[in-house]
Image (cartoon, rainbow, N blue to C red; front, side):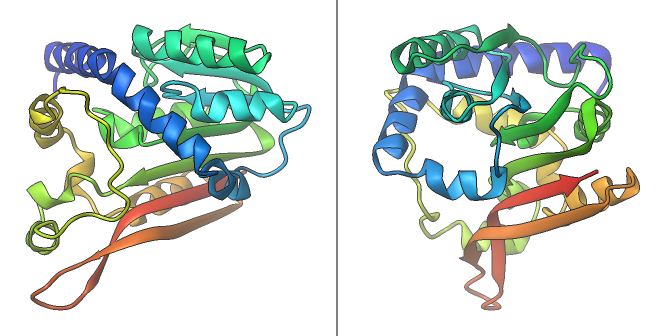
Length: 242
C-alpha cells in the first residue's frame, strides 16, 4: 500500500469509527456493566504509578480504568469522536488523562517513555503493523511490556477454514451498530495485511525478532472449521516483555 492509498485508508478508518462511536460507546458501557474489564486487567497487571499508553483507546474502556488504578495514562485514537467519549468517561469517573488524536502508526513519543503499552482490537486496522510494533517497542522502557488484545476477525476473507467457520455465529458477538453498516470496514479489511497472516503467531514472532525477553500468545476464543473439526483462534492476547 503506497502513501496515497495509506492516507485514504486512514481517512476512511477514522470516518468509520467516528460514525461508530455512539454504538461502540454503548457496547463498552454494556461490557463495563458485565464486569468484562476484569478479564483484561489480569493480563495488564499492576499499573499504579506507571506511565501507560493506550493505543486506539476508543471510548476509553482501558484508559479510564487504568487511571482509576493509579496509572498516568496517555490515550491515543485516530477518531475525534471516540476521544470525546473517552474524555466524557474520564470526567464521569473523576480521573485525568492525556488525550491525543493521532495515527497510532506514527506516534511522536520518545524512546523509553512508557512502562506499559496496550491496545484492544486495533492492530488489525493497521496498514503497516510491523512498523507500528517496532515504533511501540522503542517507546517501551527496559522493564516494560506491550499487551495487545486482538483477533482474526477478517481472516475469513483470505483463509478457507476461517470462511467455513464463520458461517456459524462468532463467539461473544456483542456489537451495537446503531444503524451503521459494517460494509465500509469490511471493504477496508480486505485491503489490510493482518487478515492475510496467521495470528497470534505473526505477532509472537515479530516481538521475538525485536529481542523481547519473553512473549506469550494466549488464545481467548475459538471458532471451528466444520469440515475438518479444527479449532481456529478467533480472539487472543499477546504479552511481550522487554
